[in-house]
Image (cartoon, rainbow, N blue to C red; front, top):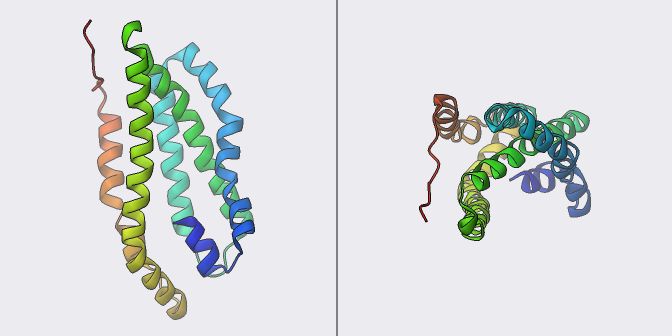
Amino acid sequence: LMPFYLERVLSFDSAVSGLILTAVPLGMTVVAPKAGALADRYGPRILTTGGMVLTALAIMGVAFTVAVHVDLVLLVAELILVGAGLGVFTPPNNSSVMGNLPSARLGVGGGILNMARSLGMAMGTAISLRHHHGSVSDFEWGCRTGRRPQRAVDSGHPLCVICARRSLRGGSDSVRFSD
């Protein structure tokens, strides 16, 4: 939803919005290679959990930063942190998934991993856009009246709590293949 916020609320054109949003992959690009090396050294659990915690904190920061008159430097810094969190999470997660597969199933496992990632992005976009219609009007109302658009922030809270509890619970829910 960030492109809609940048274009509709802050009135940036598409090129400027795209340039601002490159902060996320920039954060990933800088951090991911180092995270892969650290995962090889210390194992995936600490890094995957730490990456998701960093991402969640950065997204919460973005949620409280968005306004009609936003500090653009702060927003870009938070987007870089979102990318850094994803960069810390992704390499050890992929390594953990692929490392638990027998060599005869690596192709299938890689395909499922990529399909799950693509499906998650597609479903996240679809759900966000479905929710976008009400949220943007609430946000615009909040900006006109000076009140925070709480519905847009609150709607993601239960999902964040469920994911955080599941990741901190420990244990492995990995799928095992047999030959």
